[in-house]
Amino acid sequence: MKIGITCYPTYGGSGIVATELGLELAQRGHEIHFITYAAPIRLDTTLENIHYHEVDVVTYPLFQYPPYDLALASRMAEVSELYELDLLHVHYAIPHSVSALLAQQMVASRRKLPFVTTLHGTDVTLVGADPTYFPITKFSIEKSDGVTTVSDFLRKETIDVFGVSRPIQLIHNFVNCDVYRPLDNRPTNPRPRLLHISNFRPVKRVQDCIRVLAEVRKHVDAELWMAGDGPERSPAERLAHELGIAPSVRFLGKQDHIERLIPQTDILLMPSEREAFGLAALEAMACGVPPVAAESGGVTELITNGVDGYLAPVGDVEKLSACVVQLLEDRSLAQRVSLAARHTAQTRFATSAVIPQYEEFYQDIVNQN
Ligand code: GMT
Image 1 (tube, protein in one colour):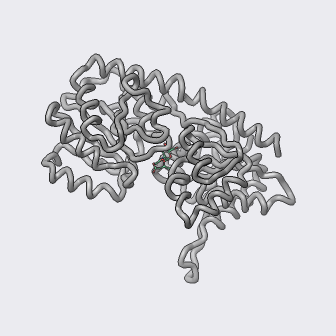
Image 2 (cartoon, rainbow, N blue to C red):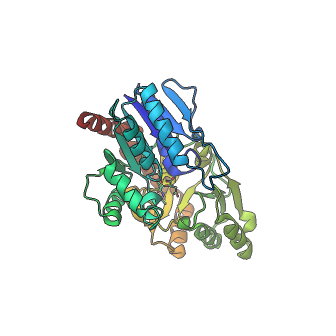
């Protein structure tokens, strides 16, 4: 098939899923056209079957807000005609599904251009639920030819928040277990490393990571690696100083090669208030790094508590810390959980299990149109 993919190309789970999906589909022989304002960070545009079309947003003194969504719609329409696309797949509803709807209408007299919207989380739970964007998000979900969500939690949430009655297909996120894998012959870290990866938004409860480290350090000489950046970084840095553990916390900033970083660590911390899926936890599991996470949203569809990771109530720093200490103090338990985590990633969330679900879904959508 010839598929146009649009996503946020910078750091963020939805863009990563969209990029990895495009790469996997290209490897399976599909022709993939990324239509975005910048090349997605994990995309090698020289690869076979991969095309990249930049969306140029022209500014003009009259525009206080340059209309990106219109430039995107124009580019989608243009690319779909030039390359005879079978469908568009947009990731994150706002504004991508609205642009896709416009593009579809622009080319309607000449070709069918069905589009699939994948909802990733905050486009439903946070931004889309805000009164500013609620009506247009609901409209674009209803008008999409196909809608998928990355967890059953998000599927139910979409129905609750938007009151939509249209079918919504659950297709869980996936991980490439050949790229995300444990290090061969990894030496034991003399100082165990906890890892947090996020965009440092309030929903991630970044400060809980610092508090967890402070608790853990009462028992084990551990350190914390903080990968990513965002508004909660400064408050977290300040808290680390206040708690006297700043020398044990490393702020690494945004990372391009998370797959090289994760296997060097021992435990992934994900204390998020809400997480539609928790891609970083899955990537860690594939690397054999057990996640210790807050029991929120779709994370419970990924982690089985006490088997392939640990779950604790949101904000329960004491319990999160106890889980971490238990894993760090009992090497054979850590080894068991690590193997189980990798096994979960390989069996339930591997690309070979999930990509065919997208292919089948695309085919159904094209056949219906
Ligand atoms: O977590 C974020 O704020 C980024 C956001 C995104 O859309 O880029 O992530 C969402 O999509 C990821 C990929 O599907 C999911 O794994 C994350 O759970 C989800 N984030 C939230 O729901 C907060």
